[in-house]
Image (tube, rainbow over all chains, first blue to last red; front, side, top):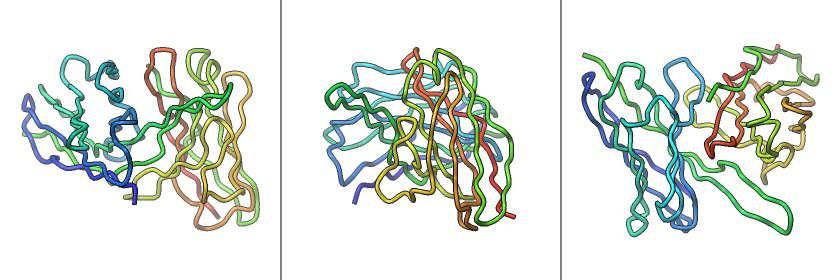
Length: 125
Length: 110
């Protein structure tokens, strides 16, 4: 069964740090781009960051640039999100998601198809 | 990186059809056929319903369909059922090699 399981969430004070993990199973992790998406309480989804299969490309939403770092360990089938200088507005459920990107003849396919259940991060004093 | 624009809420009676719009720019929705739609029930993870504007993943009912015209994508749900009541989000790949989501639409089945 294809599965993503997030962990590492918790309560942290403003200015603090937290490292989220996402354990992948049931598919060849090293073949996929991976993303982090968050959802603040009562709000919509917000894409946070993604990383290429070999870690050579990483992209971030403007609001976390310089504070968050996405990384992966293909040997451990794991995705990470290091979050520093946390703010109250970073409070959210954080989901990891698998990105599908492939080309079939002249057609390209880009979407996020598998999501974890999320881990909750609360930034508060 | 502005969010895509969706109506906050839509409603319909069982058996009816509804359409949810998703408006972006030429840098996202209008520039790529990489628009996806997600269904999210309260307390649950998002579920992929439509990808690449109009394609349905295996296992998703054919009552769900997608389309796009210019900078606006649409999700249509026909033959509304009680279990369709949920939040729906559109998403698009962007020219900055990032993703952007819509603000979400709450679907109420009357």
